[in-house]
Length: 547
Image: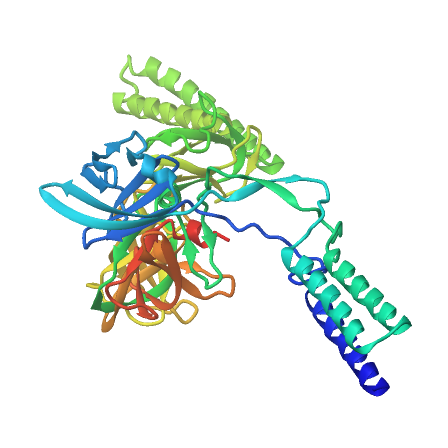
């Protein structure tokens, strides 16, 4: 009997201790736990047809509706919207921000609300059902309180059962001190179970929360890689889309090129002899100023060496001596011609000889005094020039460079002959498109390539001579794919090309694609994209930056 009593006592202790240890701290984690508050968007619903899409967002007792074109994603503000709601039919009012709004007390109650939206636009009527799930206000503002004793009815029930079981066991099997020990043990277990959470502090005290009445819509990247962008943010980004179409296009060859001035509308101003520069009346022309053909831009005073000065003085002395001899001869002939001792023809010849000597003498003085005038060869702008008064200009040195900005060319380098009938265009480093016209190609190789000249047909003030561009030439080879604007491409951090596909009204998914150049404005997607998809063509860079 004593062995059975001891076994029963051991079973009682294990049975009472096991449940106590299993749920004394049930549902509690004493380790550190980071609390991250995800962005919570307002309750919303969306619907779409082939021509338009609508997003309804609940804001308190008001329903905001964003109406957009389903293909281009352009906001629509020329429609009439009626809403059939639990509060009855209502007509939405268009606000100055382009958002349609209706009110309703039913929006303040949590639950699911079914709405029927009728959109009338340009003679067409669309009916769109919406199922709006209104969530209860969330607790967001936490106020720290004091430690409160925690009691649960399960713990009190367990303590009572342990006490009664211990009393029955003691009365049936034990006597005296053994019964008293078992009773004391049962009471201790019951008391411990009842107070297992009483006054216990596990770190942070419980918080008293207050309900939040507003929700903030914010763009964010989801865990699956998709990007949620609310309609309000899409309007700020100016997001536009286009529907893709699979077609066959002519392939394009891409050539490196640079902008050069038109050789017939530009020119250099150089000094032929060299000398000291001096400004004309009004000063030297400044950079970017407009000049006309024939305008004097500067003067060059030729320097005279010592030997040149000595030679000129010797020649001047010789001419002065000849002038004196001829003058005396002329005076003598004038006296003799009266007596007809000298023919009048000799008198005229002597007079002409004297005039020639005087002209030669004057020309020598003119060479020493007159500077060389530097004249603009063409009309245009002063593109380059660094003339300073007193500067010594070397012979054949370029003093000014005149360019006509409305007449620029592009020089490209090709490794194969270029067909003159090929359609050509160019793109700058900023992505601007430039239309070109073929002008000719060289016959001799330049660094194992052929120089090809094109005329820029469009006038763009941002183009400068020397600027590098990419020239695109169409070829006879055809390639099948999807044509998208260059603005739709986004370069990922790993260097791959991406486009953003709009899969729903507010959800975008990045797609890895392989592209080829098509023309200055368009690229051809040869892999990674199918027809009938909506691709972001404007605002793709901004959406890709959402984290």
